[in-house]
Length: 257
Length: 146
Image (cartoon, rainbow over all chains, first blue to last red):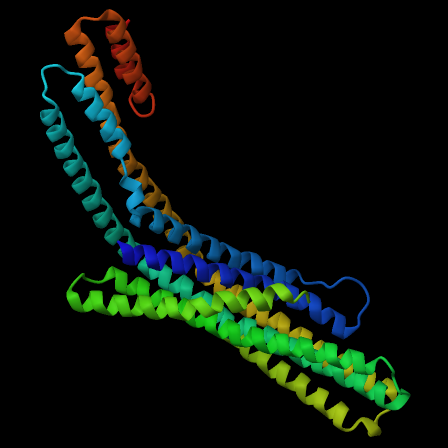
């Protein structure tokens, strides 16, 4: 249960980062519009459409992980207040001794707990297995889209930035363009942010691959070897994610285009 | 005759156009003395158009990859809905314990033959049943307790 919960929490986090990355696709289109120096507002319908389609994928994965987390949580079956109420009612019956009332409540608690615990485990195993093929495909689609298409967009943006940089450099050389020095440092800063985003995106895509691996492991048997492997996978998954959270915050929040 | 490009074909074509744009960009910059300002700007615009087309094809490749998994989105939505139902059923077990407590209250009141207590315990039991018991069953409890 705790493994499912850990997987669900980490997956929700990596999906949130994936969302941030997907949002950067239409944003990149807006940014490069500046380097083309065309008049009017940027037309980024295709980028918007793609972002919406991928938002559907991240939403469904996020909802699935959140629901897994609820079912795996022990708080779900905390009916202790209700059992207190049952004990109080039994104690009012004069024919029952307090210890007898307590015994009835303890037995009921044991029955309810084994019933719910067993039900949760059975149902979780069943649905993890049922969902696995789709989860694998969706996580793989996200990972591939980042490694391939998002990095392509950033590399295109970088090429456009370089072209704009070269154009200004030539003007600066010929006409002693005073503001050039100031522009140059701004352009280098943008270039650095793009490089950081490229590195981070690769790490998020790897974390999505790890999520797929852990999910597959969760559907397999519960023998000692599988459990041990699962624990190692989860450890690697968490280790991979921790620095990503921090860097995502810094890189994507500080940069406004 | 039109031919729709696949996800991979779109991506490969996009890569070729991006490479062409970069090569052209390097060329006009490295040979800047051979061109007038206007010519250089024209070449730069061609370079930008190549990037724009490359991006368009890359987006098409991405759109096609999302289309392929449409069925998986539906499967996972359905599984999530069923998991929610499992959660509701498990929570119902906790609720059943509360119903049992109210039933015991009613039995205690009946044993003590206190009409006021019978009424009160009965109403509380009916209130708990409000959440998940059929109307007919609720009605029969109302009849007993009023």
